[in-house]
Length: 280
Image (spheres, rainbow, N blue to C red):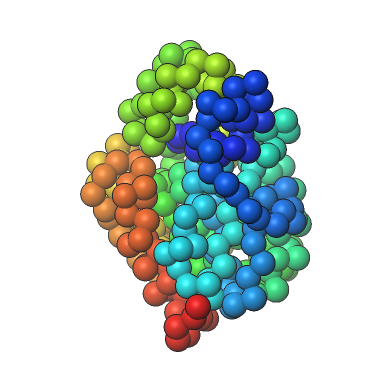
């Protein structure tokens, strides 16, 4: 759980009168879908990696991933309602309606082999998307990449009903949100409702027992991430009949921020069968 803020498209939209105080990063993209607002045309794509954000996060969390992967693997970062260019939309508080809306929106993008990567809440969304696709007899993911998330049947222990100060302290303890954001009372007042909605989505989720997925599952964890030890994360092996791998990294819940390149190398290696050779 954390906050990822697109400095131009989110903060400036929230507080246009203070737009000149925000970090300015030029963004030149072709918007094709509310779910994929930062998408660029990629004529070299041979496979797609759909990336799903953590609680409080947005598509900007994965914006730099493409530079660490060949263009043959197209990184598509999903933007959920209630953040970024979708800040005026109500965030989902239940997982099933989210998946039943997002799933059909992604189907037109599944004309190439694809995989899902999700961190924390995003991992849970990715898992349920894979099951939705199987139930609806749609194309299935080549691979499921799970990061910093206990298995679906296990409660993460995230708080419900915490005060604003308690929630901000929790965000600070995860070390995934810049201090200048946490200390900006005006900004946090707008962001906290989305974070609360995401927490509610996770805490109201009830796992439905189903047959395991067929695709391989690769799990990533931080050795210092409380409640998500190697033993806990290894339980994901029961959710696939395919190969299972677990990689542990130094760091806490947001270890991915320091190990992005290594994660990308693992993803590329796992998808190498579908994107052979070197690509521009």
